[in-house]
Image (cartoon, rainbow, N blue to C red; front, side):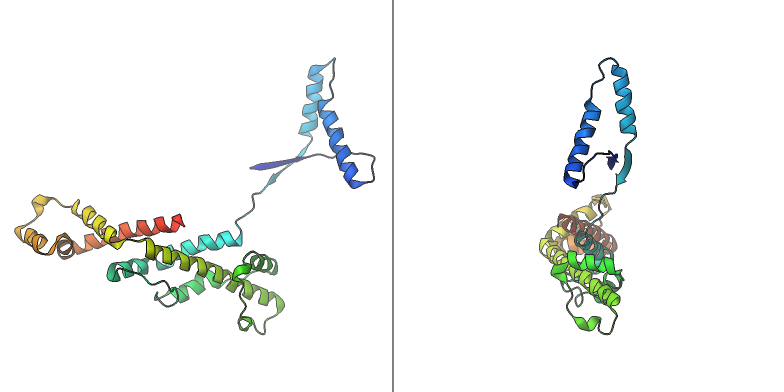
Length: 244
């Protein structure tokens, strides 16, 4: 927390720069002037002077729109796309990267959660300035609107462009950095720990011998195996998101 201390000092000077310098020099002399015969008196004077300063709290600046876009891209993937990302990985071994076309509710979810917002004129100007690299240029989106609404609409789609770009990059990283063979091995190992070898029947051992552990787990304990895989895969995806 930052606390701003200030006081007022009167000086005889018309020039603003010189007045500020004289005020600083005067304050320095006031704080350091020795009182030879009364050390405690000097301390009291200095203490009362400092206690007379006004104090205010300087609030830390909030995140920029660029920083907000980065965080919202992460939240959007986890909150709106994660289930389908898991399904695609488990069923197909890979995922699509086109939010609008490769995910069933990607387009509508993105518009509802990210784009469909209103901004004041001041907010819109600040946002467009901060995200100038993503500025929306399709004037058809705000044709016929008044000036304030034009800025609000332009800002909404500009912000959407920024979040979409960052979310798309994240999905590409998720696709490239997820080793499904490793996820599969971890899921098999973790699921097997939940069962005792003594509980396996001859039929279980036959399936394992002929078809492998994975085939047996899917047939005999499919729900548990899939849940375990989804949990491991979810943690890996979240790790990738945080890494970027």
